[in-house]
Every structure is written in structure tokens, then in C-alpha cells.
Image 1 (cartoon, rainbow, N blue to C red):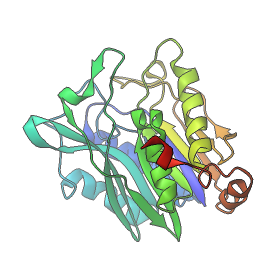
Image 2: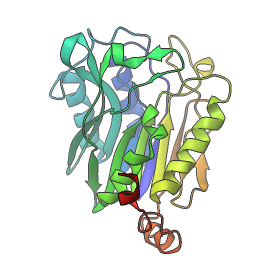
Image 3: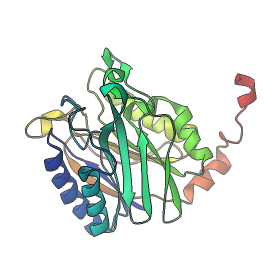
Length: 263
């Protein structure tokens, strides 16, 4: 399966960001991509008041993404914000395209490093997977990467990969943590992990979100198969679905689990 990692920079205007998504999706489709993954907060960058711009999944912004997916014949996975309770929003991944329609609300909120995402964002409550041409893929967002359980839940649901969208914060050690965590989650669940982040704020024009770039594709054995630097860039790469079964025969971490011991 050919997947495009769209490491772009978004600003505060959802309509302008939609046009960028359209441009990058056409580029990815021209390169043969079947799935095009955009970062978390692709609808509008963090630092923007989220509640006034949040839209439902049947709103105009999501419908715009659906039209781009229909026109290009791709499945698009992109971050947006949907209305939630108590004036908050949900940090939502929309996955849409021919034969695919699903959404995932970020389960693990970023109440860490002095920041409290839960003050403005309501947590999700269920994992989500999609099926693209018979290939099952899980959905995850940013801080989720610190929680192995979600990636194993994807594997238990039959997924051979997880599509991880992020707007990863910069800081001491954060790049090392990003790369280590993505590789670890691939090993924990023996799945492919396609990790797509916002580009580094210093490399793009205008108002920009938190991001360090360095999107990467990691194989089910934990090795990095393809990666980007800090700048906005598009990486189109192939995912070998059959390799998952081969790795699981050798590294039987899912089969060897002892959940009864930890209950």
C-alpha cells in the first residue's frame, strides 16, 4: 500500500488550510498514493481559539475534505476540531475517501509538560480503525504515542498499521522522544506506524503551530524505513502488508502476553 506523509504547516484559517490540503493531496495522488495522512490540527493550528472554529463532521470543512478525497480517489486522514461538551472541542481525526468514512477523537489528552489540553479539549472514548482495500489501519493522535495499549488495541482489532497524526512540541529531548516512542509502539504491537507531524515552526511562513517535523515510517520490527527532516515536505512510501505476519512469527509479543497477571 502506498501512503503519503504530508508534513505541512497550517495556520489559523481553516479555509486556507483546506486549500493546502487539496494541493498536497493532488501531489500525493499524482505520485500514486492511496492514503494521504496529514498532521494533527490541520484544520487550524494550535494557539488559535478552538471552540469558535470547531465544526461537526457533517459541516462544510469536513465536506471539503470529502470532496478532495473523492476527486483524487484517495483516502485522506487529517486533524480537525469538532464541538464537544462544556464549551470544549474534540481533537478529531477524520478519515474519509472511497469506501472509507470514520473519525477518531483523541483519547489521551496532553496534560503534561505544564500544559493542560483537557481545559479546552474533551477526551475521546473509543479506538478506531479503517479498512482500505482490505488493509486495516488504526488511528492515533500525538500524545497517544506514549500509551502502548492503544496500538495493541489496533493490532487486536486486526490492524497491520497505525496512522499517527501529531503536532509535536519542541523542547529538550523531544525529538529523541518522538523517534523513540514511534519505534517503540511499532515494536509493542508489531504494526507499521506512519507518524506524520507538523513541520518545524521556524521553517514556514506566517502563524504556525507547534511542530518539529521529522515524520517517519517505522516497520513492524521497529526499524525506520523512511523519514523527513524539519521542513515542510511530502514523503510517498510503500507499506508491505505481508511483512507484519512475518515479523509476528519471529517476535511473538502479542501471542506471548500474560494479561491475567496484571489484572
